[in-house]
Image 1 (cartoon, rainbow, N blue to C red):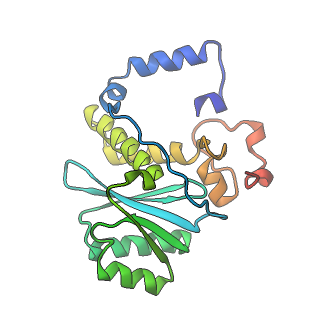
Image 2 (cartoon, helix red, strand yellow):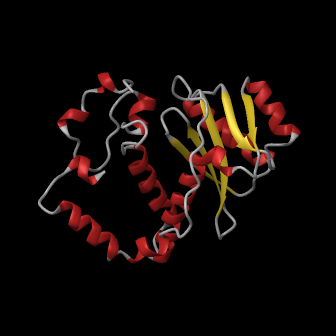
Length: 214
């Protein structure tokens, strides 16, 4: 993101050195390898196909992560339980803000394999696509994001910072940074405008007319 906004001599070297000297970055660096991304049918418009997953934090809190597969825009909410009673109001909140979707992709575990979620999605007119837990590659985009946001929280905790505030900062950066597959920022695609962050916007980014030319 920094390279898109500003430039100075030896920028690349300075960024690499800052990361090497960052204690939180080292704490949060994952040691596992990434699974290969599997091809699937691509949606034709924003917010038409979503995927959802849970992340479990050490304090007992869960993260509900919902990803728009077209724009790669990610919505994150904290939740104390993964029961249908707790999850359904979170979906109501998300759909109130962004509208409903045509399809939701999840794993086949609780609560997504239960009758309450099935009834709720049918009532909302949403097709439910369930993937096998033995093939996490099928939800690779959400899985990768989950690892990244957990590392962000882990780094915040290592530096004794408010992890929720750091999570919100990370989400702003993630949503306003070009995605490698689309070459556009997720927020720009979903909202069809340039969404600002604290870095200065380059002149070429201020014209929203080409946001959907992918």
